[in-house]
Length: 326
Length: 155
Image 1 (cartoon, chains in turn blue, cyan):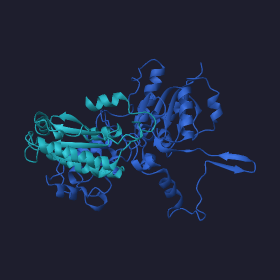
Image 2 (cartoon, chains in turn green, purple):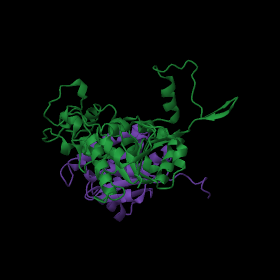
Image 3 (tube, rainbow over the protein chains, first blue to last red):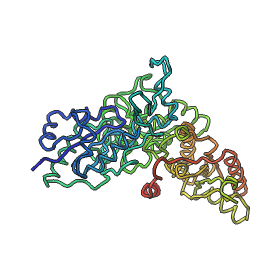
Image 4 (cartoon, rainbow over the protein chains, first blue to last red):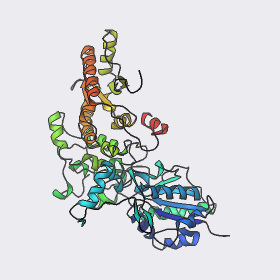
């Protein structure tokens, strides 16, 4: 009997998810033993036409990471959806847009200008990418950018979500073990639409820091202050996204003294991640006077960036008005 | 009149609290005070119940503006939850401005149960301010937000 087939693809992402998969160390041998890896552009040579030639549903497990930045991303998302039995939105980009999704704050023109004109760019002729260009040999094309970045489930049907930027190795191992056990009839897969490889609670639940009553007189930036190593960071006025973020990382960042930035996405039951944080942060501001509240809020230099660092494309508003105007 | 020549009628979602601002609206009704029909009032137990999610949901779903209203500071039925609403309002407004939403599309209004006339006048004023701003037309790339999310928000 031939082994079940495995695919992994990257759309608009950084490649960290692929490294996270390889970072499961010797467990990768179990993946190789249980699966036939048929398509994984980062790790092996395979062509789109090889996937196109497959039967529908021929791939058993597809880990799809990256957001939908251009029409090529969407084309491959549709293709892999058709060819895969289990489609997993793997990592924050596929689940909720992540860092590439921050481009949804700006118009596409501003985004391209930033990429091609800023100080670190050497572009003396002020050239911009063209989606098609006439060469003597014929017309050549590159993929066309979407006006806004979309998440995977805004384009195709997704079976499971696996959050994290990137997903933690021990969580990937747990999911790989579960899928292998399920293929052998020894375990049951969770219901469709479930979030796998993560907890159901918040990062605060896994955070070892001491918590008292939260009242904030001043927001500060962690690099500019001496934070108490034992006490809850938010209580010290450091904007920590733990209260709205899904558990599953063992509270990694707050444990080592950095604030949670929210890479595991919205906790169970949270519809809009940023809204939940607005609620959490604003409620504990220690003032009832509008002027004073405004002054305290001045300490949060970029609230939208703070609250939607990973989640803008997956939020209720999905993009800013500037992005919508193009 | 065709669709194009119709004057712009803003759609405003107004969140009121059970104890003061909803009663102010009720008072305006029983006193037969007329005010613009552009506002759809939703009653919450307290302005402190206002999850900022509701505001984003309203804008994403096509509202041109959102009104948050509650008891006057110091008068909250739940002691101090309206202060929480006020703080959320201030932070929400900053985030919305970063999202390209004009600050005039979100309004905070305190109204006691006796202030029916003031409530009606403030709504009329707000409707005209939003009319001057024009439609928000929040675009949803691809599909509209599906119904299950709505159910989650209101559950």
